[in-house]
Image 1 (cartoon, rainbow, N blue to C red):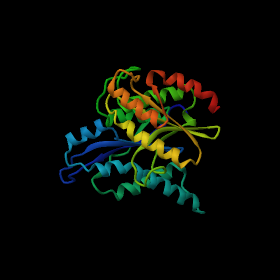
Image 2 (cartoon, rainbow, N blue to C red):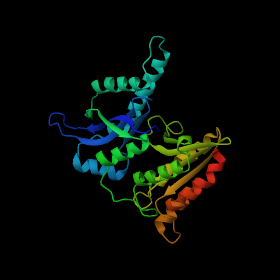
Image 3 (spheres, rainbow, N blue to C red):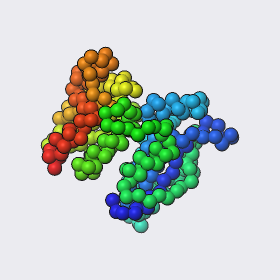
Image 4 (cartoon, rainbow, N blue to C red):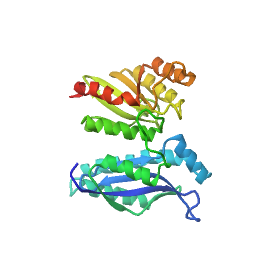
Amino acid sequence: MREDAVFAYHVLRYASDLVRDEWVNVGVLLFDGASGDVRIRMVEGEDEFARIRRLDPRADEEVIRRLRDHLEDRIATFRRNNRAEEAAPFAPGAAVQAVIEKWSATLSNGIQLSLQRGTHAQDLDAEMERLYAEHVAPPQRPLRVGAPGSRAALRSYCRQVWQQARLWEQVRRSVRVEEFTFAGDPMRIDYDYHRNGTRGFVQTLSVSRSPGDCRDYAYVAERIARLGTRKSEFVAVTDVALQEGNERHRFVQSTLRDAGIEAVPLEGFAVWVAKLKPLLM
């Protein structure tokens, strides 16, 4: 990423009562006006939705959960149509700006965009993390490696590891699972990569906060394995090392193992990535 890049962003808001003009911040849309690269981050953790329920008990969670997919689909469709046009297609950044303006003009169900603002940063993903933490995420203490944390905090650390290993551009982020399960499935896998005909998946799991999330990942892993379109491998990055003497940890470990998922504690993720790196080069 070039130095001193200028990005633009909107805060995504949800208002259950438009008359009262009260809203809850539920996401951030960030894009690079030069390249047209877009990042969208929405609330997804149970702690985040619990906070929304406290602030607005009438909030329609289904609308919020589907918003990211809807906007990504709109942008992708607009880009495909733009490329198909023979006459004067939009520049990448202008295309994104156009679809955002059109989408904003037709918003319903209480979804709103804040006024567009500019920001200076060197890295689009790092800036998204900062903006999301500043405008949307529940306040958190800084994460130390090996300490219990939210999935957002785990992903932040994993991003740093991927970047330090210079693999950030070789992994896909926030992969929809509906291609393996059912249309409309809101779940996403944090990262995937390709090596020698094998597709790998990496998902963060906060065992301390939401141990039951391992069932969702195990289900998806089993679905992907059954499809058998290509060889696959699965990793779960856990906020704590799983201990055999802990009943909750045994549940998580057994669920992951039965689905063919390798559990890697956060404190060991950098070592795991270092071993993976030569296989991706």
